[in-house]
Length: 413
Image (cartoon, rainbow, N blue to C red; front, top):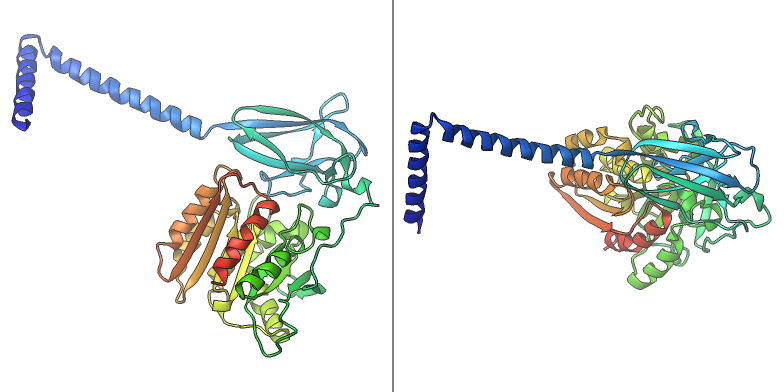
């Protein structure tokens, strides 16, 4: 078979040679021409694919009707601006006939979630009865325009406050705990297992979590709570694995800088390094002194979502001798491209563990950026990683709450 094929190739080559010899090299010119056209065709296909993959579109959001407070400024907060409720860049402008609108330019194709506010999440939009609404959702595959009606605002219904949903194991440890590294004060929550006050000689691992107001209590969570306390009440009874959880409230408008160790042109000077200094050098020693904790890194964990996931990974990068495991939910790595270079230079002398989660419908780059970070970690030694991707998952507490039980089982196994 091979010999026959070789003979055919030689025969074709001889014929082309004879033809080219008698026809002034026409055959060779034809071969070169078709080779050139093939390369041109492939280049056109490649450039077309690149243009498609990097296509940028505009999203116009038009508020046609506002039920109340029509004269107030309106802002949009979403996964395109890290859910910042008060940013002049995302303030709606008059659009004629009493309407207001904003055009988000040059955004890549993908799914986007958003809500409207009047400057903070206490004044976020609601139903006409004052109930919470789900995140608005839009899929952008071309230039897109939406007409939207705002039926009400949460502060229109002060007689309908949310009820506290925190269980008996949750306490506010301090309403104004001093952060010397940042010269600020912050509310700190703590969850103690049911057995804590029943077994005086027992010590417990500790999980430090960002965005404390969203962890335990629906009353303080603008987008819904994680339900950490209810989850642990159940899981600890089933598994016998108990843990203290410390929740640190975010700094509101300071969240974008406190949870980012790097400067950002849009959000300002990064304060993440000082923030993790606070966790490691101020808060943890205080907790270890006041409560019965297992103090080593193997039993000290850190976790958070979005920017909270970014800063949780950074905490383990900077203080591997303090934090031995990190839960990194839907991490906002897009805001800190320098992280990858610093992570590549980080070397751990101890065994480090990382739990990564992302939803498939968060953004086009969420899973890709997360996988790049996982790849850097897995090029090192002495690590354990777990990667979890939920294809329908969006960027919200609903999905982080859903993922938390799996994370906790992995954490304390």
